[in-house]
Picture (cartoon, rainbow, N blue to C red):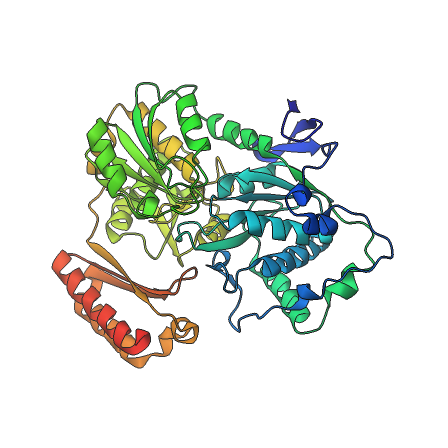
Length: 525
């Protein structure tokens, strides 16, 4: 199979079949690089040259002011660009990640990089590529693409790792660096810790990069490989019947983000009539008042156009929420229930087991158990869901927020894959999404509030605050078995998240207000 791209010289991809039906690409490197040298001559001197004996002045690499708190959170490194997250940091992270990935890989291969549409994504992608090539690795830049695209192509090629530059659903001023292993799963906590340990040692005067890099004579190269995104698009369509969505009208809210090019093309290829919102890359407006965290524009558009359903993605399209034809929200719990029931009916759900998080609605859990199914709960975070799915052998899991993982079809949470399968499920049922939701379960009233706590020490150690603990205990005693309370620090934003679930909205509202006021008084003040 010959794949053309923007490089001078075609890439030849020879595919071979491997276990579980995943294609591995045997890759010949493009003839000439299309690296960042044309954009940044100084960076080209780091990436593109092969040097023997000449010294480079890279003392600036070692001037980082790192926080005392861990850099890697629940979803990689994430934060406000220009604070901790910067080009010098990304450069060093890339170098040390390259060293760790090489040391833990049984074969040699490239690193894949993708990015969302944020204004800072180019800068961070360039910097991390410079670090990776300084570590002697070849880098393939996919350009604008969803996070699951990077995960899939990493797992389906000879790559030894992948990197996504994105802050997912965060506002435009934030960004992040997320790593994947050769299997397409998020890089293990142990390897992330190894990267950070080396990074901190360098910043503290140990393992100086100048000592490690100056003698190097085998630096890597950088290639632009946007044509590989087509392989990911084909993998989304392959499991479904051709043009299965013919006759359906679907609205897509693309959040000015990573899926603006791919999602409409794939839905149209499957036969759907597509109406798009926020459908070009805009780094100033990504996630602002739109996408999976702001469903109002999608709800209005679905009703205005008489659409069968709508889907809202976040900035990197690893999550999705749906809207039915009546404009009602269909969250991850409903998606898991409907997809799980379909898989169960076709005997594709071992043990009738679904993995969800502590945020999953109690109504969903009770309804699934009434069908004879099981639910295992994990902490919030799709990496915890994925780990439990691997441990338990579950084929379906996810989060209420729209991170859905189905191991039959993918290796990580994938908003576009989930949307396609849910739309196909609805079409093949002969019913509307609203009818399927009405016949599933009744959600308990569940309120989620965020309290901004800027002080990292207070935020990360909120459990030691006695007034907050007493307030939580009081709420739990009052609601008993008819409600739940969950308080946690966000792993990606400076927030304490409060969730209260109860049999009535009045009860949930009362205890949510009570807990939020307590946290504001004792932690946010």
